[in-house]
Length: 419
Image 1: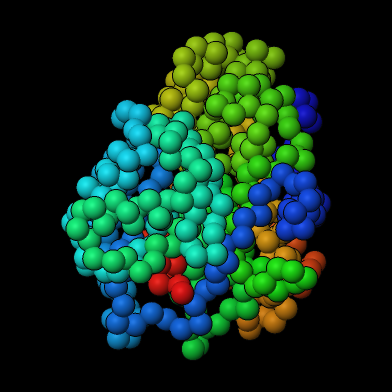
Image 2: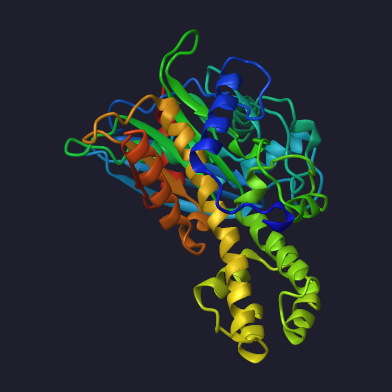
């Protein structure tokens, strides 16, 4: 295709490349994906008569609550509060950063002695459940925190605020939380042979349950799938990549996650306008767009091409011919199609690596989280169709996509109770 845009990616070939890279990372050879060991597994039994404090911190938001499991293992969420992530509004020292954490958690003081902490930044997970921060995204300004043990520093800050002893703080990221929430979906009548957690929202990542092999014990592995680089990049991807905060990185993520689909689509439409694929009036309107389209705007058009509440729908209603409409729709649909195929390839690689799913009655549980996966035009449906084609029909690996209410909160609570 012109400009090297390939939407009909061979899912199995891409999956094999991702899988080879995963295996290099596990062997501590040079790889694109980080393959972070977590030293944790889904618990064998459901929690009962336990309470745990849950923190979910990432981007600009800091959420905290108490999760209580009753005698039957049924969770209840209470004391939920949402506030700003420390370090977003101004730069903080290490002491100031954790002091703000303690202030944010005051409403949960001494309500539990364990904390599950979903911290959506790169960490090196330790065997005691703590995590060493490797770096923040651009939103958070607290450079002194990089390199420290987050759980240890938080414990110290809470002690200064008069908290009783915290037995354990377990650090995890959202893919681990998703995987653990999926494991909680199992029961006496519905069992799974392994688990995968997949996030496709603003960003993208995956975690899976690695079986014991060589020097690696069975444990959850976080892949950092978005960093995989051996993908075919179009001229549009290359042009957009130059405008991002970290050009030359996260090639796979930039082809399928929500932060990038809208801007890449804008470049595609405007290139098509310049190259004569639209009538003059539509081309002029597209080239006049002063800001890149958001995923929401792109998706509104795909769900309803004559929806005047979106920019493209208004152009379609007022200016477009039938040919204009068809061209615009097919170009944007190709972007969503590519996202689905990339998602299927990631999940295929993870499923193969689990070594599970050989029995149709005990499939691999795949818990997916993220608005891009569930709400973007046909992404969920197409991902499932490609998994059926590749995993089920070609590889005889059985799987099931599941969702769970409050999945990240629930999974983080489970993480907080793992010994």
